[in-house]
Image (cartoon, rainbow, N blue to C red; front, side, top):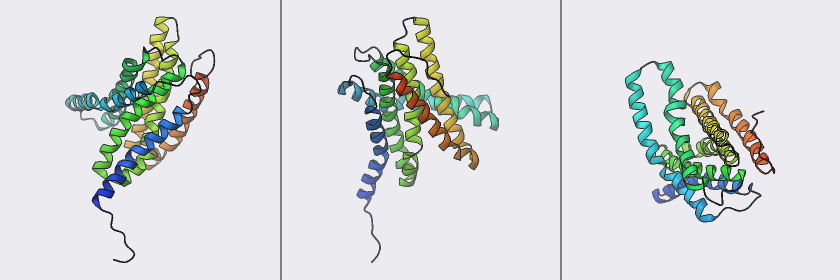
Length: 241
């Protein structure tokens, strides 16, 4: 019919995959360019990314068990609305990314700068986000993929990148107790920011949902500050204001 263009199923699938994957690739390129120090080994970067994808498996299992277990404890709507984004979703997801970086990169000889914490955590988070985005695109179509490309995918990079600053900072704290406490602070920061983002999105209240965009800008500001601090000769704690 004149004036209309019929998109084949193959073209639609390819376009959906590109739309699901491209935002993560753009963010990876952007933040890789922010690393002004020694360049990271490509094999280690790929490893962190692909382990981020694989991390979805234990996360799915953990979230399933947490949802089932919590449903047995309470049916309180308000409690569920608060616990779901922070404990049932953000906790296992950020813990999985944290574990990937600790296991794959943290003790590697090339993890030798504070910025490396940010770099590898974003790599793991984008691996996770790519799989998650492909799943959402498959289930809900390109409209959702497009919306997530400017919200959920950048959000993963931001709250995980902020956590990554703490991971990088902790590596260079000589005192083991302070280093461990810094790692815990980073994990809590990642979980809190992720949970807050999900809480706003899942609230169903228009005014709260729209607060996602100021939150994204704020997290971008904090991570950008973290990147600048990471390039200083002497690492310092991250400030949120």
